[in-house]
Length: 103
Image (cartoon, rainbow, N blue to C red; front, side):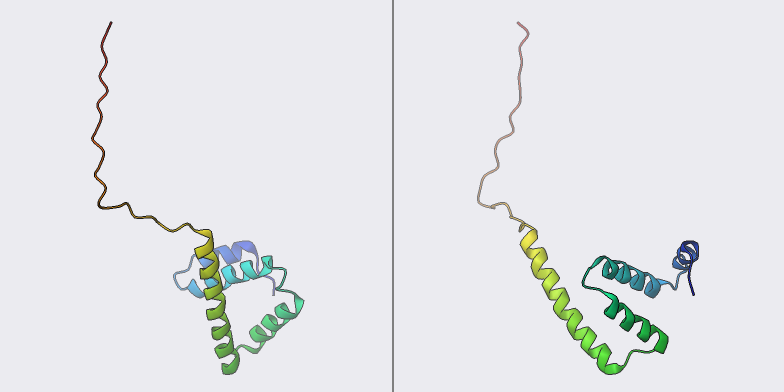
């Protein structure tokens, strides 16, 4: 069954489409990753065709996802500069007022 873009856009407007949105976002990311090849796509197809995820697979996927999230957090912390708090002991500079004279 091929679903059109318009059908998907309409389905995503429904109040109960949270899981659909999450799966579409995850699938979009996966399809951009060259490591998500035909063997993994076939596995996703078979899970959808089966209509269920075996418990052992769900547990293993959750474990793997936790490790993946940790990797993303570690990479994020390396890429984002830490926020530096201003020193409390340093006195604020006085406000300067510009004065001009008409000469």
